[in-house]
Length: 406
Image (cartoon, rainbow, N blue to C red):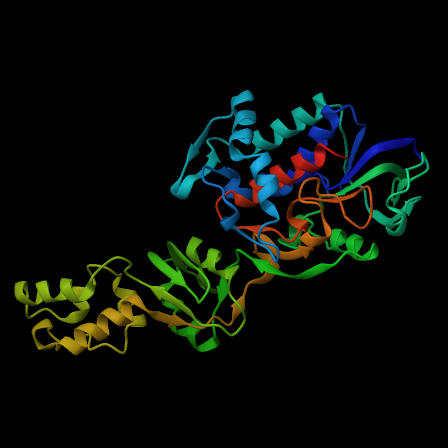
């Protein structure tokens, strides 16, 4: 068995690296263990290789959790501005896209290199290619939380590279999203081993698949993207919807997918903000002979009109349309209904919904309230952000908070 280490962190992730840096700054000896052959793989692939590392506007409302208040403490103590100060320190060029999203100008490698540099300066050891087979706790148990810790208290980890012993153990192992990147349920299993509740998990920020008939019908629309307002009973997002050869994707669909339940119908406004009846009446006066389908080309691609709006009198000249038909056209364009067959699942999901119960953790420290010295941070926790840098900000914030106390 190796010498005792103050802090072992499972996962060389965004959250894990941030926690390690902060703990190292406090003079703690820190070892990060990861089964992958490279640190921060998800950082490198995120944002199309440019890493959408945070957002100018961060609020608890941008997160889903069974305890919606839990994330407030961490997000308020390590904000997007704190992370931007770190970006500025390392002189990483970045730019803003829609909705306050911030991306690297050059490469996501800039973010990972920044974190690894900070970790090195804090004397953090990162050990890759390390498979963890078992975790054991010595000393304090949940029932004797008040007892003074002894030097023998702590955690022993059995791995393919020997055993490691630490006073504190931090789980930053991530969720189940994108298994080809090495995602595993290890963090959830450790929580359950120590009697900590884990909410059921499912894929979030993920494309929809279509019912077989719809998939065939919409096959020719693959590659078309339109500005849209996508909604269900609980949430609404205005972004692009993209038709793919498998179903529906694009930012609006990814966002609503986190709020979608199996069997539910989604409503899509194909022309948000446009008063169709008024616009068509104006065209009736200007060009009464043109067909409805030609008039609708002002707003939608021809292929979409022919495929999605088949219930409308597309061949009829505008002058022949009644008020009722004009209103039906507007209704159809603003409330196109689709019932997804499902989602593409963890294979392409950007995040995992559910996870370690927030009520079992301290919102200040991220430590288990049942098992002392055991911390959970990042995606493994039941806090899931919207698309747009929010999940990275949760990783930075939760990792920073735990780093002050491990």
